[in-house]
Amino acid sequence: MQKVVVVGAAVVDVLLKSKSLRVMKSHQIEGGVAMCEVLGGKIEAENGVLVSGGGGTNVAVGLHRLGEAVKMISRVGNDDLSEVLVRQLEKENIDLSSLQKTKGKTGLSAVLVANDGGRSIVTYRGESGEIERGEIDWEMIKKADWIQISSLGGEMNLLEDLVAFALEHGIRIGINPGKKELVEKERLKLLLSKFDLFVVNRMEASEFWEDKFDDEEIMVKKFAKAGTKLLMITDGKRGAGVCEKGRWIKMEAYPNKSIDDTGAGDAFVSGVVAGLLSGKKVQEALKMGLANGGSVVGKLGAKDGLLYKNDMDRWLKKKLKTVEEILGVVK
Image (cartoon, rainbow, N blue to C red; front, side, top):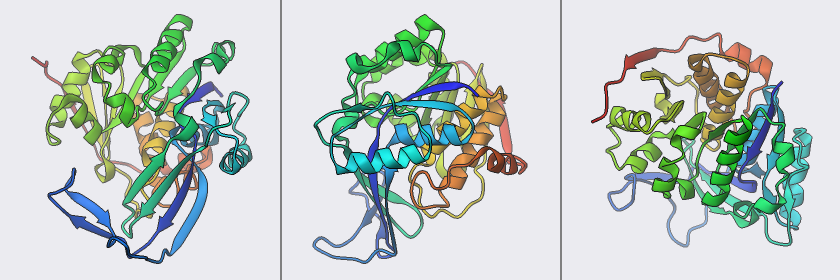
């Protein structure tokens, strides 16, 4: 069992799944596909839940279920939503002694889920995007084996402080950056070589390097040239890839009907980090990430499908198609 400090968002998710939500192609919006209902309309949902969410809590629970000792650093308000969030995390035995509490509002996400599992999310970050550096117990973090960072609401000063602290004290550190961190391209590029694990999805990688979505190999080479030690790029139902020391390994996804895609990326991260902490080779850690993500999409919400250790062992027995190549040099 390794000691992990997870730093990131803690919000409450309200999820509604409806077969009446329509997925439509449109050239007017980014990505070319929209999920919609007529303006002013009212539709029925077949299922709905109110659960803890946010990348920080999702990764923390995922790691704990896989046997790691987890402390979580985030920030919530002094309201009814925080009581819901804290109560659910306590049931998962997450150490919340470093959870910051203030008079503000707890973050909230409204998640609309279509019949095919695709979802659209509207997030109000509230206090989760305002983690105070001065309230962090840095002496506690010194005891950690790994620091895992999810979205910080664009707080780049805090991110840089965490990276510097990890390097100074010999603590491994990984990140699955949020949208607000990724737009800080130049500052984030300077940190790439300092992370022990860097995880993004394919669309995020494309936007980060301003490359075409289909030019995956070019993106990977640019990350490698920037000094990224261990890169993983998720690619939805197409699986994920890992790049280490010039080797690019792509692995297919586990076949599983999607009920809700919410939290698949966070589940992937917790599976990968748990694998690395237990001494697995990167290819096996990649497979653990895919297993956790594949399980989560089979349930409504970001946590219900997170695997426990015994469940993970069963998933890992299945073989997945894997392709490996040696990358050339980026000019």
